Amino acid sequence: MSKHLFTTVSTVALFFAGQAMANDSMIDQLGSLNTAVVNQTGGTEGVSDIDQDGDNHFANVTQIDDPNVGIPGFNTPSNNSTIDQDGDGASATVTQTGNPFGVPGNDSSIIQTSGAGDITDAMVSQTGANNDSDVVQDGGQQAIVSQTGESNFSTVNQGGGSLNLANVLQDGLSNSSDVLQSGDDNTSFVTQDGDDNISTISQTDVGHSANVTQSGLMGMSTITQTGTSQSATLMQGAGQTNNTSTITQSDGSGTGSNSAMVSQMASSFNTSTVTQAGTGNMATVSQ
Image 1 (tube, rainbow, N blue to C red):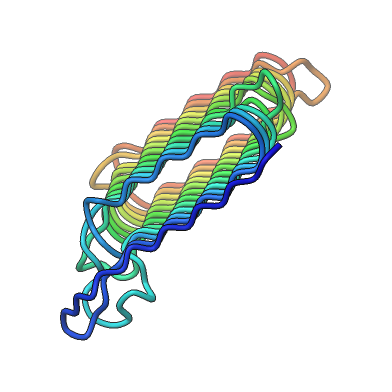
Image 2 (tube, rainbow, N blue to C red):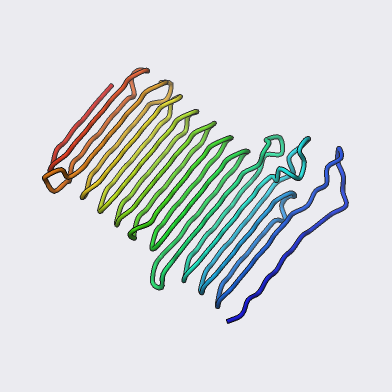
């Protein structure tokens, strides 16, 4: 087993308004048959750090666009990416396009622990400024995060099982998504294309499905699922504001398979609370 450390710092003696422009890439590999690819040719002031410990990992980072203008200069990189892979066969892809007039830049962090035979995959795409994505995976998990705009925040934490899927799409300003999956075969889909929306999904145990769509302003959604095969769907419409939905599902003394659908498309300042415990319950709310 060998260890290879490659550090590439491309420094160009160019100054614009007192600003130095450079890309910074570090790759640290310990193990066998690991692959790391970094492309920072499309811009400057990108920072990439890849750490691979184990075998058969794959990491790909593409960072594009010009440095942030004005103060604080290079101390605030236009794009920052960190990938940490342990075990066997993890895959991570990060694509970030910065906005030179947005300070600070985009930030992505992926931490993966993968066992032999696991399919552990994370894909992150961020365009704009001050977007932040954090992905933590343990076991055979899949996470897809796409953020466009400014100041969007996404957290995906997957562990304690396998075959979980989280798909987060945010397009706008200051949206926040938090997905926690612990168990097996859970799926979460989050789409936020408004501003200042907050989504929280927590899935524990087996076979849950959560689907959140928030297209308005300052909407809030909380979905908590435990037990077996719970299903929850929330929709908040464009042009509406300050709608709140809470869905809590558990087996209770039953066997699960509860279903809840909440639609807040017609007006603003609505509140919906759905609590289900047992077997085969169905709830539908339209506001």
